[in-house]
Image (cartoon, rainbow, N blue to C red; front, side, top):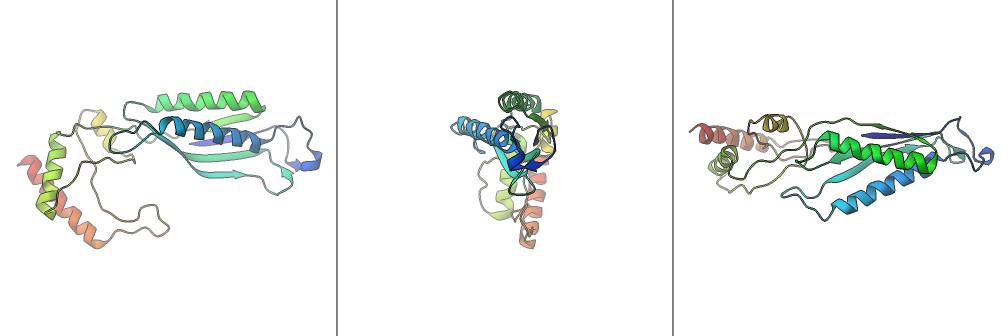
Length: 202
């Protein structure tokens, strides 16, 4: 998601700004405080294997010079939510935030929301789960504990359509400045996938 806060008028020197001109950075501060309050409210309610729902802020941008009043600022981040919610539920949260900040600060708030995928959940004894855990042990000699995955992708589309599906992959350094996956992980995961197929259809 991207939240864009704007005010009418051009960027001006701070000494030319009268008290009645809205300050987008003050409004941005209010957005950040609302998000932090919501994170604190969600924090005690852990979802099994993945932890609490969350808002994450990765970028905050505003201003072009230290003594000029900006007319726009942007906040960019993610919203990770429980499997029993949909993107429509989350869109409602952003509409509420928009109304609060516009009313209190006299700015315009635009929320650009980019739904990726809703969450999903499988039963622990689902055949595909059992097959993966058995296949992992066949391939590595080690047990695979039950777990969860905070990121989202196409698997949720299958599960929500009634087709049990699951994530498993390699360990490495995703979204790092230098992304990499060790070759040993590609080999291990290939053995696990093949063993899982044999277990699932065996």
